[in-house]
Image (cartoon, rainbow, N blue to C red; front, side):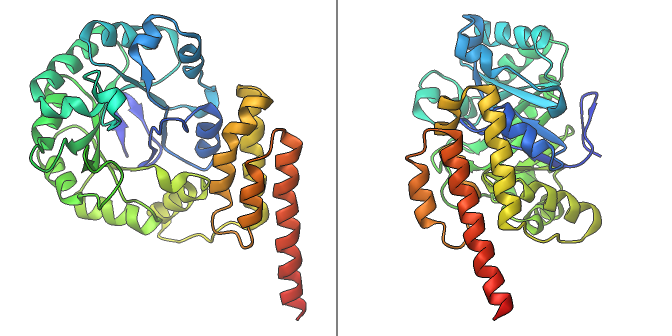
Length: 332
């Protein structure tokens, strides 16, 4: 079983920390579908140090989400350590993760995120400083390199291990690739062969079969699922079941999908407020609707929703239409 420091996970399936997505409402929903570990979206070290209200709200963790990894990012040793210490003493997170993979220019320009990939020495210096300052296990989420000419994945992961990091999550793409092209699983295997701490593989895990294949082909200790879980927490459940039993569970019905979408919406409303939550939920609802017959008009209409009742009405209306069509097919 996958163990990070003294935190033992019940399975090998990990929800990736996705910016703008992985708040408590989403994480709890995914957790209930069986994820062994859920990761919070990245939080600015300076935002924590300055006690920015929005940043402080991002540190909220529902006890039911645990075990949980809370991710911080920054480019300066002093503020990164201070932020880590605050999370260590003032949050109920189980693990502190350091972002070393975000490819967005506004992050890398601050010498944070994927910018670290160019310097294994900085990785060692920063991670060791955080490890020495906190009691919780420290992990790192990183990409395989900055670009094709600067792939230091093995050295970078070994720097994390030497610094006292308890695990590495490796995305098999470079910073330049962003989220395009194919993830390189060969580099995940190479890193695993040169690392003694747990390695969690990430990239192109779109089906339960992909997860099993990644584990078998790379030897990694866990699989991290990101975009495939958007609007589809069943991906987590189906993957856990497939890895544990070899059985591939069926896809959810339209009614099941919309019921969970509405549950997610209500949790988001409780977390933020109706005005903010409904607007944020528009993208999530579109993800939940993916693959549902006749969803085009509803997906368009969702963008004009301003209240819970409007959004729920659209979703339930679509369910009624789909169920009516299905009953006609059965009768016919």
